[in-house]
Image (cartoon, rainbow, N blue to C red):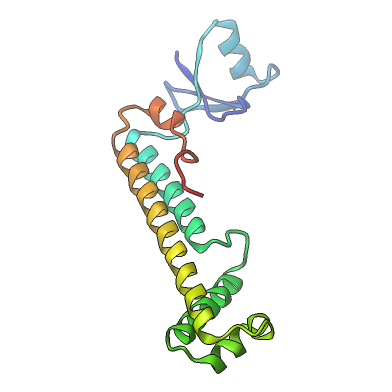
Length: 168
């Protein structure tokens, strides 16, 4: 008979012949029989097949890219929305060179006596940096997707490092 670990912690075993699942506890009759027979227990497999593994890895990479694009991964959705509304409104005001709108949106800059043109340059510079970071994140995301699509085995999927290659 063949057996397989059902978890990485090796607490549960499945007997492949009938699908029976039992605890890896020597007081459990099925587990004791497995040990007594000297049966090898196959390694834990996180996924049932390669397609499932690839879909799971792509979903994890998409989530990572989304969090990086947001730039505030630990914030709530409401906080993220507020941050983006403020950045958008500031950029629009700066591009329109609207000193009153900029002063209302960025009181600390107004207190320093910065004029609309200075703030417009700052916002453009920040926008260029955000755009470059976004492009780098997208490039890393596409690289991961291609690499995941090229995985040939479940072992390769299990060894794949979704944390490697990100720009931030």
